[in-house]
Image 1 (cartoon, helix red, strand yellow):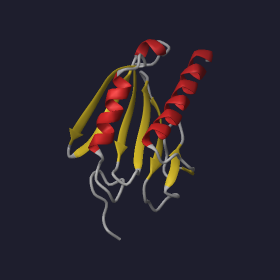
Image 2: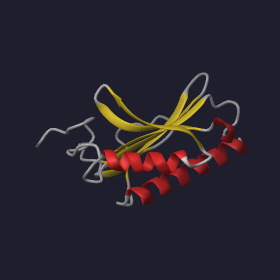
Image 3: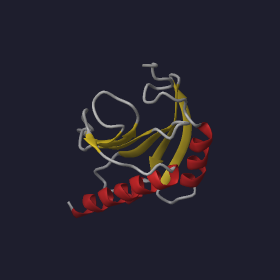
Length: 144
């Protein structure tokens, strides 16, 4: 097997034009405080900081990290930070030894292995599905 490139999540390189498209779209929404393409330690990705006014005061930070590859594999990691812990989950499509190619690492700790799943192939549809799930999570937080 060919070793993964980029951040180890896929056999393909990161698709920077897709990250730039998503960055532009997300920056235009009220839910996003900031969307930056980052290259931390050679791992190109999109870091989205969510607007905290949508969250209860107990949430100190909320973010989404996106890696999208030229073969339409992806890793999208949602994270909430609290004073004493973090709550996170991850939607993935990439070759791996622990799950099917499409899989979900459930909250609150995003453990590996995750749960096998099926995601849309188009980046717009996948991100829409994920942000709908984030909105459901925010609604649940306000009910607690």
